[in-house]
Image (cartoon, rainbow, N blue to C red; front, side):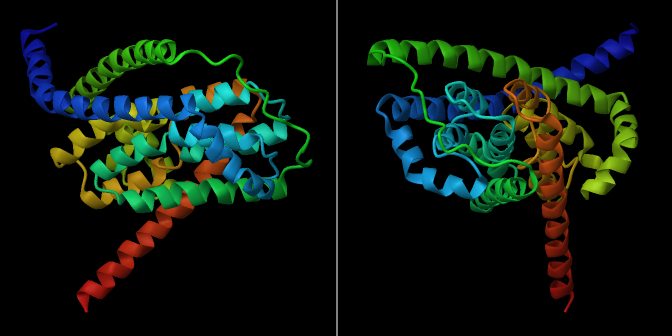
Length: 313
């Protein structure tokens, strides 16, 4: 490796460290706080109470009431929490596909809304869009997928309840593992992103995905962030998104369009494979959310167009 190349790499790493550290601390604070709050809600049986309150609504989606706890767990916590609940239910492929599509649309709502809001998207709007999109896709899939709900499915429970201190200790170990993993991924991603731009590789990546970006209604300059969000999700990809925005690599409107797409369709590698392993049909999980994202992005573009026309008058 030439000395000049080494110097460019070192310069990129040094440049990215301060902003990445700041963003990393912010993300970890939110993640730990949300995780701790959800641990308390589950320990004191508040989360099941919320689930019981919304379970009658799930008949609209062709799902048994017992599926509500899985959705609520995913909504407030993450996909892993939803999977843990689903493992106690005897759902068929149809029900799993509908439920998992809804979970993929609106999981980790608190953390991911904070991330999207930090990049400039409206927090309330993101919550409404993601929740309604999950409900709409649930209704649509219930109408078009063959079969019907099995009302006999019930929640089997998770066994004997642990003491508070044991639960707290298990949460601490889990949170510590998550934080260490987040630190490693966030720093690696931001450094990789800067190196790809420095050596002109980003432009080549953008060229390959440009046709798909046009279908999605997304600017070609957002392709790297789109890839990041699809591979590892919003939580881990937040630092890269914020760095791009702060350095002016993408415009405010470009980020809003990207947020509108990825708020519905992200984590299409790990989470998608995990839910497919649970029995859901993976291509329905992917295509259903892509279709919803396309509608939402072009609707957002229409809003921008109308705003521009009004401002010109």
